[in-house]
Structure formats: structure tokens, C-alpha cells
Image (cartoon, rainbow, N blue to C red):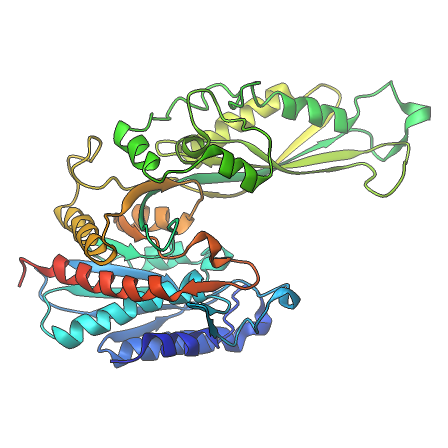
Length: 458
């Protein structure tokens, strides 16, 4: 059995930045590292090309009656910039104070190594374990998994399984693990308003035409009510209230509003009535302005009426909402509310479908839930409880991970998501690190989970 920490160090040394073609060799090195390691523990490995970076598919076959779990991960990482703010070289892993520092240690090389090591240990002790396992490790997650859905569509038969198991989500502390059961979806678009054919002198021409900045401000101001709700007809029609157990589970985190406000640097919250801030970011959809442009942005004053003004908008969506329906509703409202005297252009950008997988034995558990998925949830619950000494919490999160919905839509599979990175791990930032205690316990829990999943078969 290999040393997981030493293997992780070797893995991190490959600068696998998918966004930058300069790191082509690092991408190839990371892909070869994962492929070789999976081959060494007995998996049949295929490196499957895509339009950009290949996907690694590694299989342990077995009796068709055995449960079949797909373990997902990604071998690409974010750029290390700004490198000057790192305390240690980003691609030379450093162990210090119970952590391993380096780009990708927490996202996602460390968590993926947890599952590879767990599988290796399980199979070393139980070579005849009645469980089929497929690793699917992609190289484009950090650039939006843009070729992943095509890969899934082309390989549906090869990827038939019972559920997906992975760790690309977080937990609040080393002592409390979270199973993520829901992720919000997203739509992104840009609105541009055009007035005169060129910028104008505000003294010579002001007061006789609709200023694109004014038109944009009026339009944007109309999209929310004073209490913070989105002011678009039908926006909330598909939203389902969270079940009491979900609110109760969230309360177990013990989060304090003052602590959160201090962390954000704000004096008060602006959450819709009836929802705490912690509930609002998990259970409600949003419409957020991400950036405005138009007119003079430099120092001092320039008396100008701009020709154009624009805003970048994203909406987070919750289960039962779809990007297609929500975009149609929003775009219709924006066109209707655009002030007269200007021209409106909406540029549709990317989107992600919301996702939820309710664990078994809950009031809103689907009646047709796969019994093997239910077994997977129960197995991971038991394993985490035994290793950490307390049960996991089952929480939705506010972020969006589009590939989860793709896996669900294309393969028809739900996911068991065991959170292994922590808030202080600095994902996507300088000095990223992975907690070695979480890594050690994660391997033990994943090993127990796989053994438990295989019980009663064979």
C-alpha cells in the first residue's frame, strides 16, 4: 500500500492549470500520474480524449449484481496567481502545522487522493469485495467542465452505475463533516442599453434624451422589492419551502448572525422576510448585479452622456426552477420594463441546473429512490459517525456545480457528496492547503463506507 501523503506531494508537483495553455505539460503529468496510480491498484484505465483535456475512466469490473459506484474527481487546478502572495511555492508541496500547502491540495487533488487511497486499502484487504467501482477523473472542472457533458453523452453505456460518490464540497470544521444534498443552479447574462450613436457633451445635449446610465439604473432598481425579494412575476412560482428537518439540520451548525455579519463586514442583513441569512443562501433563488459599466470611470470629472451602459447579472436557482424557464421569465420582464428612447440587448451566457438529492428516511425522500443510493447514504453516515464520533449534517449549499446536474441529467444518477475541504483551506486563493487530520479520517471513513456498501451482496 502506498503512502497517501507522499503520493499527494507527487501529484501536487504537476502544475495542472487547465485554463492556461502554458501548463500543457503539467496537465499531461497530472493525467499520467492519476492513470498510473489507478492502474497500479488494479484498475483497467482508459484515457478518453475530449475537445481539450482528456477524461480518465478507470474500472473495477465484477458481477453485474454487485452495486456499482462512480467516484468522480478532477485533476486540473486553478492558476496560482498572484504567486507573490504565496508563503511557499504553489507547486512544491510543503507540510506545516498539520496541513499540506500547495495549489490543488484541497481542490481537488487531496480529496481525490483520499478516495484512491481508501479504495486501495479496501481492495488490498478484501480482494474479492463484491463492489464495482469506476473512477471518472476529468481535466476541465476549473474551466466549467465545458466538454464533460459531451463526454457523458458519448459514453452513457460505459458509465451505467447506481450512484456517484465524491468530495468536491466543503465542511465547516475538522470536527463536523457535511454531506451536501443540494446545490443551487445559475443563469448568467449581460444587459446592454444603447442611446445616442456616440458619447455626448452633457451640457450641450443633456436633458433632451434618455441617458443610458439612467435607463439602466431605473431598470435594475425595478428588479427587487424593498425587502430584498426578486420583483419578477412568476420568479418564485416553482420554489418549494424547505422541510422542517432541513431547517433543523442547519440550526445544528450553530451559526451566529453577528459572526457572519462581522465576517462579511456589513452592519445588517437584507434577507427576505421569514428566512435567516443562512437559510436564504441555501433555500432561495437570487438575482444579483455583478458589475456595471458605462460612462467615464477615471479620476476627476468628465461631463459626458455615454452612448452605452451595461450590467452583468447572475441568478442563483433552487430545485424545481430551470435555467430555460427562468431566463424566459426574466428576459420578458426586462424587455417590458426597459425605458423608452433606448435600445436593449440581452446576451445570454452560461447556466447550470439546480440539484438536490434527499437522503433516505426523510419527509421529502422520493418514493422511487434507488435502494442502492439509499444504502450509499446510510453507509457514509455510519462511516463518518464511527470515524468522527458524530454524525454528518445534511445541508444544501448556495454555490453551483453544473457538472453534478449534468451527471444527473445524462446518466440519471444522484450523488453522495462528502465534504472534505474547510473554509480556511483557501480554495482558489494563495496558500491553499489541506488539513491532514481530515485527510486521514477521510480515508478511514471512505474505506468503511465502501465495505458497508458491499455488504449483503456477492
